[in-house]
Image 1: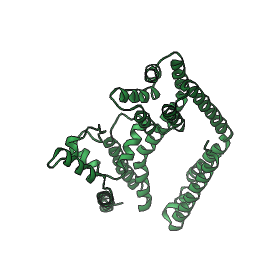
Image 2: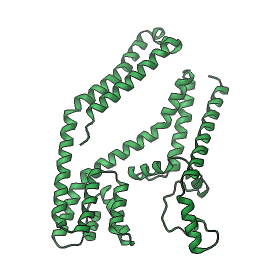
Image 3: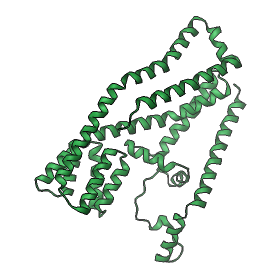
Length: 324
C-alpha cells in the first residue's frame, strides 16, 4: 500500500475526529445551561466579569499536566466518562496518557496492517482494534479492582459492626477500616473519611463513595446507613445483616460461575477453533487459503464468518452471564 493512501487515511481520521469534537462542543454549548447559570450567579455575588476557574472551591481532577492541553481535553466528548473509568480502575496516570496510547496503537496498527498487504477495510479494522487495546486493558483493570473491592467488603462491614458494638462512633469505625484494610477498599474508605474530616456531610461522602465504586453491594451499605441516620435503629445489627447478605450473594455468584464454566469454555473453543484450523490449512496449502484475502468472494466469506462469530459470542455471553 502506497504512502499516499496511508496519508489519506490519517487525514481522514483526523478530519472525522475534529468534526465529532466540534459537533459535541456546539451541542454542549447549546443544550447545557448549567455553565451560564453558575457564571451569572457568581457574577451577581462578586460583581464584574468573573471566571468560574478563578472562584471555584471544588477540586477538579486534571486531565493533563499541561494546563493548555487540559483545557483542550475538557472539550472532548465523553472525556468525563473516560476519566471516571481511570479513577475506578485505580490508574495512576491521567487521561492524556491513555489518549496517547490509543493514538499510538492506531498508528502502529495502521502501519503493521499496511506492511502486511491487507485491503483497505482490514487496515482500518486493525488500526481501530489496536487503538482499542488500551481501553480494553483499562476495562479489565477496572473490573478486577471492583471484584477485589467486593471480596473485601464483607470483612470490612464486620469490622465496622464490631467497632460500633465496642462503643466507637461511625466515623471512628470508618477510620478503623481505612487503617486495617488493604487497597482498594482501604483507599476508597480513606477518601470518604478524609472528606468527612474536611467538612463534607457524611451522607455526601458516602454518596461520593458509591459513585467512585459502582458496586451493588456497596450501594446496599450506603443506602442502609443513610436510611438509618434519618430514621434511627441499630446500626450494628444492620451492618451485620448487610455483611451476611453480601456473602450470600457472592457465594451464589461463585456457584453460578461454576455451573456456567462449560458455556464459557465452549465460547472460547468456538472462537479459537477457526483461527487454529485456518493456520493449519494455510501451512499445508498457502495458495488455497490466500484466495480468501486476494479474491473479493473470499473477503466476503471472511466478513460473513467474522460477523457470525461475533453474533455467536454475544449469544453465548448473554446465556452464561446471569445477573444476581
